[in-house]
Image 1 (cartoon, rainbow, N blue to C red):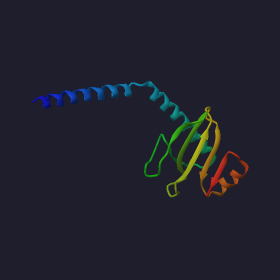
Image 2 (cartoon, rainbow, N blue to C red; image 1 turned 120 degrees about the vertical axis):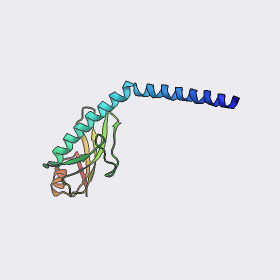
Image 3 (tube, rainbow, N blue to C red; image 1 turned 135 degrees about the horizontal axis):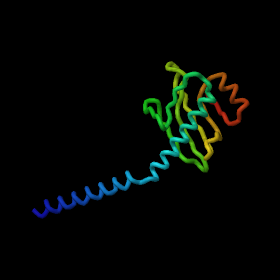
Length: 135
């Protein structure tokens, strides 16, 4: 009988501890602030990659709209700026092209690395030091 009472008390204490820690995690404003910064960075990266690719239709998979079937994507602080990875394709039949973008704290471009065979992008990369294309 004592074993049952001890188990019940232990389970109750663990339940209360989990509830308390969950409440603290959900009400922590730091997580929401960091997420809003990440979303702003990703939205800036979308605009930047759209100007580089320069096509009418562009599908983007990034940390705000991930698609696990396409691949892993991330956004994280790096030094004084941010690193954003993702994938893009021009149309439904096109393959997904991975990219890695480094941004400053003000969301200006430091570098953009693409994996693409587009002759238009290869020509642009020759004159743009911020753009690196690999086939």
